[in-house]
Image (cartoon, rainbow, N blue to C red):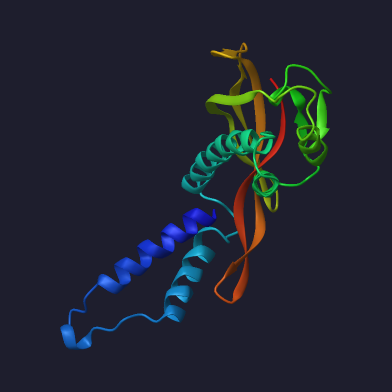
Length: 215
């Protein structure tokens, strides 16, 4: 959501600052920062702060959910890499938590392991990756697809399901051995969250990940 807003602000500012008045150059004016923020706020209120999400915006959020799942495996690989600096791994952990709707979501440990407890709360799952008995395998996620589109489940929530294939890579002295694929699913949830726009705080829609389980 944040990336989208930044791109939207940039595009809007460019179009507004590049436009010319039909009355001639002497009538041109450059928008102030306050005017740009106000225009952006109006657009966000119209699209992302409304009570209902259009089909187009729901489709956009599903694409964003796919990207967040792809980001998750990148961050998990960084976080589980014991050779990295601890500060770097802590930052990866923070990025992982920002992808999920809450710390209480349940993660099936098969996501990055061949064995283990079936499901763990997110924080417990992340702790389990910090002291592995053996070096953590490399996680690969592929074939991300929507199997249940976002649908309204409450006044301020939409839910859907995305499926994906998980594969683990084990480094050897000369090669990387890949495990068989495991089919898994992840919940995607569109909820309203507080976001700063200029000096104001708005309630806007954002898509986040929920429980991850074996299909």
